[in-house]
Length: 179
Image 1 (cartoon, rainbow, N blue to C red):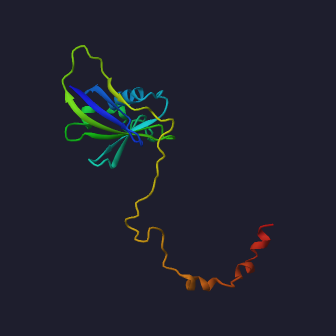
Image 2: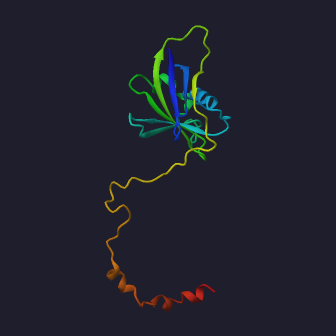
Image 3: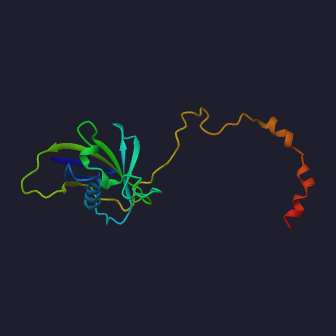
């Protein structure tokens, strides 16, 4: 069977590629197809991330084993596409180059029979020009547990008055120790 993916760059413009690849190929094969389809040279590190139906990032699947014990972490090459994506689980996130953070939303659009004579992976359709730089990511923590939106220690100006006029730190000879 052939998996047909739409790979969408997370950008302001509509930029995507449609890629056909065999279901027994690995995530590493899909990684290679994506960076080729978008014109990258393939010299940067990348990872896939599993996600839910609303694109919330879950588990990382790296290109290389970065664990302390060799073989401890499963990599892209350890995952055939059919083991992680199917008609119920159609979405995965791909990040290429952790400095620039090129981020792609990858969705399984169809599962079809192989076409006789076709060579896979294949870029079926290309839409949009790649920008010079990746969209700047804004990493902010969710503040749902903090009703104030920032740290609040319940101290006010009156609480801080107890330190006013207190020069007792000089009694410990700290000034002498800094010379």
